[in-house]
Length: 476
Image (cartoon, rainbow, N blue to C red; front, side, top):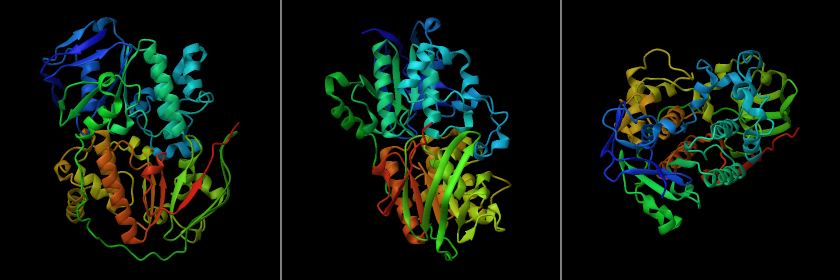
């Protein structure tokens, strides 16, 4: 076996983290690896140590680092790539605010003309991406672009952190096909996964992790992928939802939650939505489905008062015609909204209790100190979800999956009249997904809330959803 490098230290260290490594970790050229474990197990930390921690502390990693190209790809890498850390999630819908946002073509510079870049884009259905501004990409398109950009640099080793989340079924298959080809060409690929079901059939080695401890590597070619899934599945403990605080909530006094009539959204010559009609009434529960780039997030931005083009469309929200005198905050205070974009641009460094407590207000950001009463309510919600031990942790120190769960709790705590949840289970491990889905169902049923739920995994749709709206990507 041609190993590129091996981490042999019994304890691996990185700023603020230490991992137990009693069995050693080996990365082989031209092989597919998967580091897998529950949320908070230390997967991303291990990837950063293997990529960047060779000279930190007492880490002993054996290999020819000088001649290796190693890349770790995380969803938040978009901030570093663009150089625009002061962007905000609504900005993509505001055409006049995007003059300084780079296009994909300007970021990749000379790559667009290279055969490698074009081949990768063809595999991922990104043929029209160069002309788009960076923050106009859907979360799925953004993830595919980051992957394409990393792969086009032909690294010796590539770590991909949860690469499948946000991708529709077709894109997940296209990505698998591409990864198999690159692996066969000699690239060592390491997937960081939090669900056993995401293990691809062609994986060679599985590196399990639990509670910042690296467990013995599983040779999948010897055991079979089903046996590997079963083995790592034992690391994921069952989670039970506790008692959610009831709280206070005004009685809903509307018939139409929202109605879109022949709506159209375009930016320059690019049409995102065209002739869209959709009426959602009080208490209805809908699934919104469609492929990457079909305009699901743009559609929701019309409802959530984030898109200025709502004023030039025929839209009714909570029985009132949009633009008839209501303020943005009159709408937002009645809606609980979570999306991948909110997570991407949520960079608050306060502790978890304060982040959740801020959900009782109607703002996206955090302004001023939270009242003691709200902090107490937040603590009870964290306890119900079994993460009271994270209450004093800084939000930015959590794993991506832990952050997503905290943001979901922050959305639910207000128990609003309408819940709009765009891929709310992104990055959650399997038991936490079941826990979160149970909580969504409980809050929705108890408050008789209207629900719009977006996902690329139809198995994740809450059981109380009875209606489906599907949109397709506009061609051309």
